[in-house]
Image (cartoon, rainbow, N blue to C red):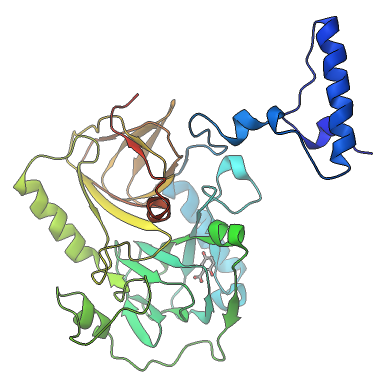
Length: 363
Ligand code: GTQ
């Protein structure tokens, strides 16, 4: 028989009073007897199960690209993209070792694809986003169309779409993969299939989905069949231009600087149903007001350098670094040069469930 306290970590028998101790001993005996019926007393864990405010079991963390890159390149000599299927170094939350989670709902990794390589075609119910960190000219193919990727581009491979990646350029390409793997695992709703060929058949000229959906226009008789965006590459050139213009149009928001969210033009919602994606510009010298929200968020530094104080820890960052801000952790960003930050979180899911909260008061 496994002692009750061994399987129910919250049960502590700390006791100083004799009368109380005998009470606790009989309770413990009771807990052990009901545990054989797969039952447990709510009153011992109520406070943890229904906390007064979020108490994340994961922590802020930062990945310095100068430290990470040599290992990424070393992985390129260790295994081919074809053998690995996806050659990725997972960014794992230090408080969630062994889980492949960067937050309890999100997965992140850095994927390397070398010149001439192909990451073979497959599809799965997990949705993926790619945010291009280094390199030019590799492609992702999604449902019969290719898109060429550049630094700062945001590319989506929505749930159950066929996707493969290839690099016809002369340089390595590295991108941030963001997936909803932990969420899909929670629902036990994961399915996956490999393609018959390494590279899917290309049936649609490059740029077609951009022309049909990304110009403030939609095909006249087109009706969306799913929540995910019909645009699958949101190029950095356009995002950057929008941010640059905003800096001339008025003052920055105190908590966010100039911040935009990526959008599915057919719905106004997030491009991927499970993950919200954002881009923000912080002017040189700008410090954000303290802010917190319930969506744990992964950041990729696109331009600039500075530091973020997350809870009681401060991380200095620069271009191509990554960091994670847990749910309800107070964050302050300070930009020592003009900075652009990409980020993603589970905010659309929380909003759908009427759960999402923010606190702009910095308490
Ligand atoms: O590109 O399909 O980083 O399936 C992890 C799982 C990338 C992908 C990851 C994946 C992919």
